[in-house]
Image (cartoon, rainbow, N blue to C red; front, side, top):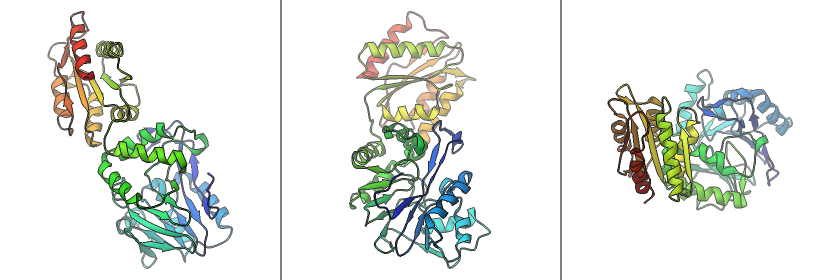
Length: 388
């Protein structure tokens, strides 16, 4: 990763062997754990890396230091994929001081119980600075983006924002492409999606700084048009506004009956001029991608089989994910299937009604086991209602 300011060095690492980020998100293109070093009258290390890549990261650090002693270790975020090596750095360099938020200070004993941090920690809050020489870090509190202890820092010499997990994305840097938004979108909605208000608050603070580059803890440095695009998308995403016109049809089918209904509805929506229709199988498709599409589009149809007198579990899981991600401002259509006592629609309605500013359109379509010619009229009505 090339840094415009040669005094700022990238010392992060790629993880190409990781299967699940946070033990839940598939990352076929791996993951980057970004870390930086600023050389000036004082030397500051900005974050560490995941323990999985400890040896590679320490080799990068040693190469960048070239025998010199670092003065500070700045911890923007305590999550173990960035802070796992804090104790090792702290003990390797006995003169080094750790710089973090007061909330992070409280977390240190929970992660590193056998390390004595007393007397070697500088806590920073909103508006505090750390002078390294020509380079000065200005700290910005970013609570709940996406942990409570998070701080960002703005380096005024290079006009660079070190943004913690904000503006990050899935994927190792070695696989980086020009399409930042694809995996940044999936990352944002699944990692930070709940915290739109907090993201908006931080973006208002960012507006007072002249930012030419953003260095996240995952993914590439953002500059120029890429930065402008990222800021625009983060504003849209964090206000829970749809990004694109289209309809997501998400289905949970046991023996194929509900799947056939969902696919047919997708065809009807396209015939009626829907600009984009995504039909997703919740049993087989990546849940994180379906959640991404739910946030991306303004309209959703959920179709599910009844199961044990309630809702087929993968649909319950999907709607539960939306609930805990603070999902809002969308239009829903509902299709239920049941062979003898359809109940899926009732459960889905109850879950959707907990979501802020979400409208359920009529009719709610009920299928008995398999779609029949008479059901086509109901699907036509639902398609027209959802597209209004």
